[in-house]
Length: 202
Length: 202
Image (cartoon, rainbow over all chains, first blue to last red):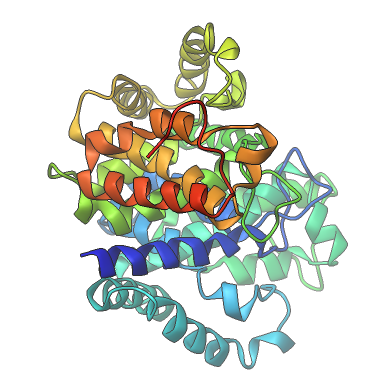
C-alpha cells in the first residue's frame, strides 16, 4: 500500500506541470496571458456538471467530469496543438500516445489502465460520454472568445466559417447547445468581432 | 430551457474569475508565481480520484470531486484567506456566506441549491465525503511545499508544529495519508527545509 501511495504521489506531483502548459485562449479578466491546461480542465469539468442536462443522449456526468479532468494530461509531454494549426496536427496522435504510455504508466497498474481507458475513449469519440466531453472542450474556447470580443480569433485571423466547421462536434452531443452556439457566432459576426469568412457562415 | 442555458452560461463566464484568485502556493516548476484557485481545484479533484482508496470511511468519489471543483468558488468575492493568517479569519465565514448567496444564486434554482448544499456540506465537515475533501485541500499545499523544498514555508516562517497542527484534519479522513504526511514533514525538518518550531514537532 505504501508502494501504491508513493506512485500516486509521484504522479500527482508530475501532473502539476499542467499548470504550465499554455493554450490559445485567455482568461476573460486577464486577457494579457494565456490560460493553462489545469485551468482549462477545471473549467470544462464545471461546464459538464452544469450543462449535461442538454445532452441529446443520457450521459454519466461523473465519468464525463473524470474524462475532462484527464483529457489534456498527455500535453505535459506532447504540448498543446492549436486547433486551427493543421500543420502541427500530422504527428499529434503519435506524440500523444507516447505521452499516455509514460504518464499513465507512472500509476499503479489498475489506476493507470482505468485512466488510460478513459482517455482512449475520449480520443475515439465513439460513446455518448466522449462526445459530450468533446462538446465541452470545443464550447469553452468559443465562450471565452465571445466574452473577450473575439480576441484570439482576431489575433489568428480565424473566420466564422472555420469556427463553425471546427465546432460542429458540439452538435454531435447536443442539438440545443449547437443551435445556441451558432446564434452566438452569428451575433459576433453581426457585431463585427468575427469575420464571416470566404462563404457566408450563417 | 433557453432561460436555463442563459443563466448557466452567465455562471460559467463568471467563475472564469477563479483563474485570477491567487493562493499562497506555487506551481512546482513555476515557483516565481502563485497558483490560482482554478489550478488548485483541478489538482485536488485529480488527487481525490487517485487517493480515495486510502480513506478510512467509504467515500463517494464523484461527490468528493464535485465538492472540490466548487469548494473555492466563494473566493471570487471573498478572496483567498491564507491558512496561517489568523487575523483575516475573523470575518471569513460571513464574507463567504454572502459570496455563496450571490454566486449560486446566479444558477437555475435547482442547480444553485444542489451546489450550495454541497458547499455547505464541505464547510460543515460533518460527513465522510466532506472530511476527505478537506484532507485533499490540506494535503496538496504540503505536497507542493515538499516538492519546492519548503519554499512558501520559509517565506512565511511557518514551523513544523504549525504545519502538523493545521494538517491534523488529514487524519480525520485517512490514517494512512496522515501517517505518510507526518513522515514527509519529519524528512523536511531533517533536511533543513522546515524549522521544527518551539516544540519538537516529531
